[in-house]
Length: 244
Image (cartoon, rainbow, N blue to C red; front, side):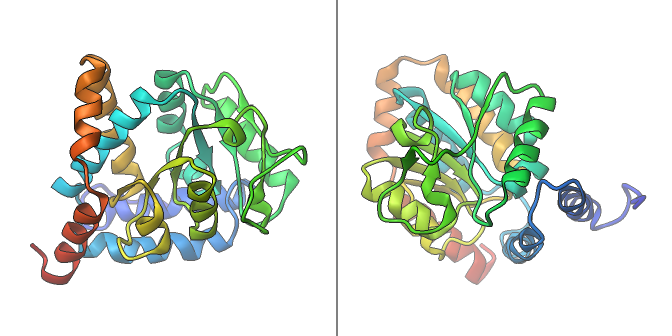
């Protein structure tokens, strides 16, 4: 669909097109259309802009990722369709693997996501195996790669589901997520929640990561020590309630 840049919904419509293209290309589940629409509603409520609470979370996320010993980037169909370049750039910046992990079981779609990320420059992409499984989880997302999510100390998971976020946390892993709904189970379970559209969040996170990598490790530890995810979520909820 040709959308003129002057259209007031230009960015939103282009993101919808990216999700639709993901479905047509076998990358995104058709259920992902529902998830994207739900997130879009919350994006309206935060002003369709990256707010200070999101920048604060991005800064803490950058600190956590810099200090991580084995960070991993988990990728589902929506994330692969919307921000493949950002995910690849993040993986390269951290020397961290990208790992495909989806809720709706489909080996073909897992392969399609892998090939899509490789096509955007990822040096390698891990896929789920039956040899490594997450505890406390019964869905397809329990299957992971032994050298990826299974051994990770920090997992960056944009557009996560609550069940797996809880399972990862119960296993002692730190979880960084991007979620436009500050009231969701994922948002409230994660170690750090970036309440923002994933397209804007990836750009902000990469910017904060570049700045954090230039600083001593002590500064990253300081940033983490003062970060409070509950306060960030409350700020986001207040923005939704009052517009301020």
